[in-house]
Image (tube, rainbow, N blue to C red; front, top):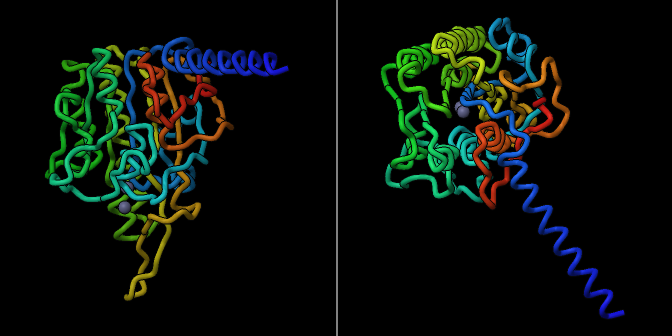
Amino acid sequence: MRRMTHSFIRFHQIFVFCLGIFGVAGAGAGESSSARYVFIISYDQGNPDLLQRTELPEYHRMAREGARTWEAYTIVPSITLPSHVSMLTGVGIQKHQVTWNRHDPKRGFVKAPTIFSLAKERGLKTAMIVGKEKFRCLEIPGTVDWFVCSKDRSDAKSVAECFAEEFGTRKPNLVFLHFADPDRAGHSYGVASPQKIQALKDCDEALKIIREAVAAAGALEESVFLLTADHGSHDERKEDGTLAGTHGSAETADVQIPWVAWGKGVKKNFTISAPVVIYDTAATALWVLNVPLPEGFWGRPVISAFE
Ligand SMILES: [Zn+2]
Ligand SMILES: [Zn+2]
């Protein structure tokens, strides 16, 4: 009896061990869509409901033609830097420990590996073009080949133009692009203000510039776009009676984010029903590029979105 129990435990251990190996290997290589380029585009304060009901031809064409969920989730606290660090490291705030939300060089770099450092280890080229200085904590030396954060050109259209100017010559495989405009308008004028809606429309122009630059470089057929956000927001009334958008809580309006995949190997016109959390963006980007997920990664590739 004792022997039987022992051998059962051994078998069980080996089974679980094999699951581990094949699970990780499968996520890292096996069934990947194997595109050469991944573009993660984050709409800062991109509320899924507002995105859905705003006329955004580029965005909605990708959402319609590709795979999407309007009920993905970010972390708590639902604030810009911790959320983006989760998006780009594949782990929660408890692990990456970027608890601050402003540019603070004294705090150094994120302590967890980033998707950029992991992609670099596999010989891929990486880029970050962002509209907020605080992202510099993700630029671990030697891991981002092309980093741009211009104070004078931090709007979505400038980010897109900066990308378009050099994508064709640099051809980075893994690109993170950040649109700050909706967050700025949301905080100043309210979650669904005309200014916020205009900011989303400006982002749509920027998205078009990016897509056209990728097409002009002959890379569109080899690309996957992931369109998402760091958090949503809710309105608060200011002392003068006007509305201002804010976020940071665990309320649905703050934590629900959109998640759209479009491009090579992505299912056509598909609604993702599997749960998607912000760190799955990191996992999906690496999986598409055939970069193995390291141990301790929280994110899982959104495999159901791919053929
Ligand atoms: Zn934000
Ligand atoms: Zn904000």
